[in-house]
Length: 144
Image 1 (cartoon, rainbow, N blue to C red):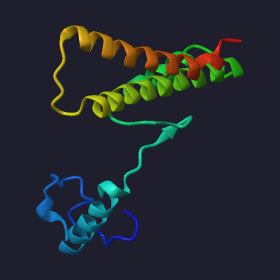
Image 2: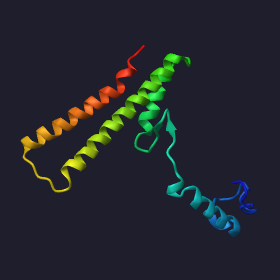
Image 3: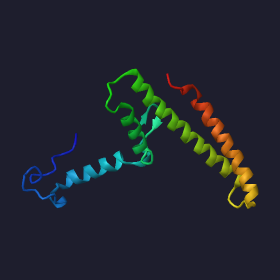
Image 4: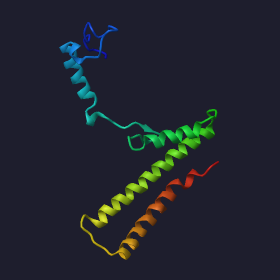
């Protein structure tokens, strides 16, 4: 770690067993401060690939899309477009789901009661709007 004192004489030895008690106290205190600042939640910003934030919830899906787009192929504009389209579709899907969640929270509140028929009509309208918004957003992503 840059700018920190040496962790202690025992640390670089092959016989060191990993015991934290072998760390010099100055190193341990400064490393603790450094780690606390580095991993402070307000300092952590999600990485964005093509403008799509990578989070713990969607990392696997994003990686799978990129691997699928480039698997066994040379890097070409076609592959890049396929990867870009995959990311844009994921972004559109995420936006549609967030819109549904927001609409449900706004229009229902916490204690709304309705019959199954009312719920079917209500949810059908929200889902129809989300599908329309999704379709509009990906309309220009048709394959070449």
